[in-house]
Structure formats: C-alpha cells, structure tokens
Length: 301
Image (cartoon, rainbow, N blue to C red; front, top):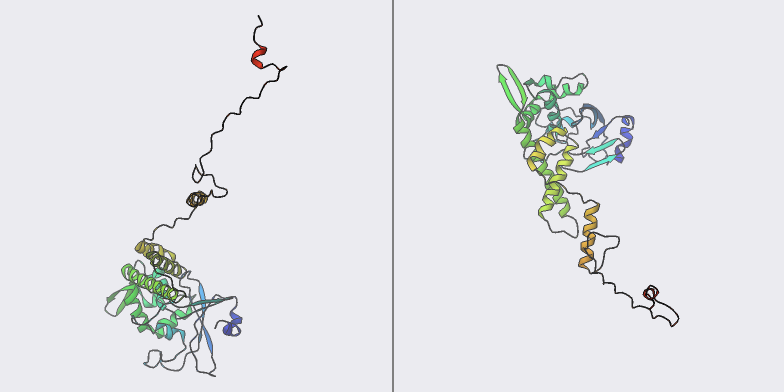
C-alpha cells in the first residue's frame, strides 16, 4: 500500500508524512491533497495526504458516504465504531507512515492539552494558529463534529449566553486513554491467538499485551499523559532483568540438578562433589649405607 503511494508523495519526501488511504473504485483516478496539522505527540507541523474531497456540503448526511477526505473521514466518529489511530496496522516506508484508521481525538487532545489545560478557550482559539492554517479549515467547516468530540471525550463545556468554551477534563481524558489501551491490548491478544500452533494464555500475557498497548500509545501521545494516566492506572510490576550473577546462579543450580557441574561456574559449593581427603604417602625405605635425618643428629656413645 505504501509503495503505491511513493510516486504521489515524492515531492513531500523531506516532510514527515501520515497517509490515510481509502478504498477507491477500480479505475477511478485518485487526486491527493495535503493538510498541515500538528503531530499528535510532538506538535510539529505534519503533512497529511488525503484524497481530494467531493462536492457535497461538509456537514450533509451524504458527506461521509465513501468520501476520501481525511477531515470528514476522520471526524465521522461514534463511540460504537472501531476507531483507533493505533488499533490497526502501521506500515513505515521511507518518509511515509501509513496509519488507518485515524482517530481525530488524538489531534484534539494535543490541542486541548496545549491551549485549554487550565482555563476555558473558544473553539476558534483551539483552531487558530498561524503555523497551521488547516486548523482554521477544520474549525470553520466541521465545528459540529469538533464540538461533539471535545465535549464527549476530552473537555468540559463552559457555556454563557452566545459563547461555548472548552476546558480540558482530566477524568474524561483518563477514560479515553484507558479505553484506547484496552482496545489495543485486545487487538494484540487477538493477533497472538491467530498464531499456529496456539499457545495457552497466562496472566503474564495480559500484562504483556497491556504493557505493549501503553508503549504503543506513548509513541503517539504526549508522554506525560502516558506516564501520569496509563502507567498510574495499570501499575505494571517492575521488569527484573537478569544480571550476570543471576545467570551464574541459575547455571550452577542447573548443573546440580543434572548431577554435573556447569562449565565456567564457581558459585559457593553448588553443584560441586565433595573433595576426597589426601592421604600421606608411606615413608621410603632407607638403604644400608644411608643414614636417616634423625640418626644424623643422634649422639654417638
């Protein structure tokens, strides 16, 4: 998939890319356009290549049917749908990273964290930044979707006559990230179950899949949220890495269990057979003309 996009993305080779392909009818020409939006983790400008939108009104009932527009495709989001940003495969190809589907809540989380963490801000404030002109496009054409996503998953809504503002809600963010981690862990476990021959599942497997989910999300979300929210929630047991002494002890124990001394080990007396006591050699016989040492010092009468 990524290989087929290389020709279209060659002129963007020096720009970090996230490509969101959609299924197009056979033989239908694909027209790509780019959107410059903040990276969900670093906040740096990132070019998103998408298929050009069609002519329907952006908020019409038919606007989401088969559209290749990233904005509408991404914002067509409901809690019952599978949306993930990271729930599916990630393919890297040179400067192109193919990620599908895209969950816009991660983009909004970045914006809300930077601009609405401590005080309410208007949607225009969230979407206004000279570095990201396409944010204004999002705010102007998809305000209804943005309001629903912000209010449902990330922010408390502060209203006054004629004004709607948003303030980051840590509890909502926590629920969102935990739900995302659970979905990812289930995805990883499902992939492992498809392997042949199947392996029995253990409690350690569940910890392993959840740890992997948190590590995967940490690559795409601001790290402080991963540290403060997900790690605090799961409280993974510390991973003990065996050192050289542990390896020697294990080798000695293994040698003892098999009745053999492990090669190159000398840990205490583990695995060693008791040493036989040395016996004194018998005295050599003395020749007729040879004096013993004691007789040499014997006083002659």
